Length: 289
Image (cartoon, rainbow, N blue to C red; front, side, top):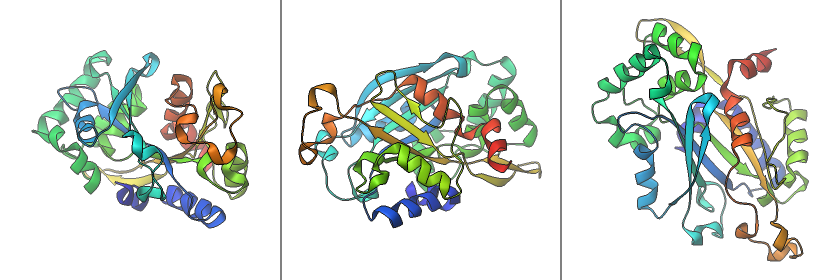
């Protein structure tokens, strides 16, 4: 999954390389995120079973009424929170899977989505394979259908052309070793290096308790040739950063004693809602401005 993601998203790869060159081989992933269509078995469950078979545990559900989305996150087996190593050879990431609540969309939008789901056969059973190989499980869409979804839901349009591809990976900033382990310092470092960060709701997204702080780049775009021969630029993926601060009861621990379970876990609707905007037209236009 990571290989396909990095091959398709040059900004994500460049940022990852930049952080590694500055901080050494200390990059660990906080979470991997996926988008899905919540209809006929193609939603969260199409991916969840695979991770649960390997010991992941479903945790809290999050709701995004304005975007007509819901999400569920999964924690890895407890022993893997403290696993040594880095990157995909390091601690297993949390998994964040969201789905579009298709039945809440307009009838026109539903018709488009269901049309492609029908061409997929039993594609939902192969969601992980599709993500790993970087292919769609449904027929390549025509441009007019993509436009219909774009007008109502950026999320829906993104999912139509990207399928189960990784929407983003997230660097765990507090696992870094240099001064950029502070997310504020990392944000400044990345912007100073010429990369655009998602400004929706402010560059830094902070949970109400102040203990989960997140930011992200603006998504890359790629040329996509639709089934009817139209070629247009479509949003791909982005890279996120997350700093999880110590829970109040552990604030007096010495740094060498701190483990991942001493830090704020989970996700925050307010933060995630703004992070979703990393693939939006508004942020993409800002990137090229």
